[in-house]
Image (cartoon, rainbow, N blue to C red):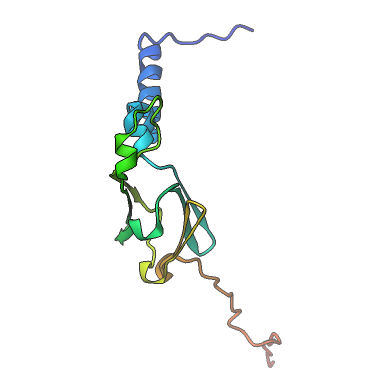
Length: 159
């Protein structure tokens, strides 16, 4: 048996545009030039049980130079790295470690969180955040009640 496939003249164009939008908007670092990409710090965000977890790589940044804000469902992480005079006087052959600037990443969180109950820790250049989900979005267990007494009652009929 032969299968016929309808020819679509714009199939390749549509596939190319889909790849551009997918890779360009879901992975915007592909559109950044290398200095801009190098200044952006990588972040992982995932959902676990009753919280949203965040891990950000901030090597060479002191914890006091990191500012984390949550407004509504938007989280912003800002980091500042001051350049020393010695670093600014050097003649570099390769210069990929950014100094003397402020970097910022802003994310839309998948659920509403309670920022007042958030926990943050910083270990070996990695920032770890735990943002508890708001009570209103946490899953609830609903128990089913029978609405009847433990023993079924039989209706008696009198003749």
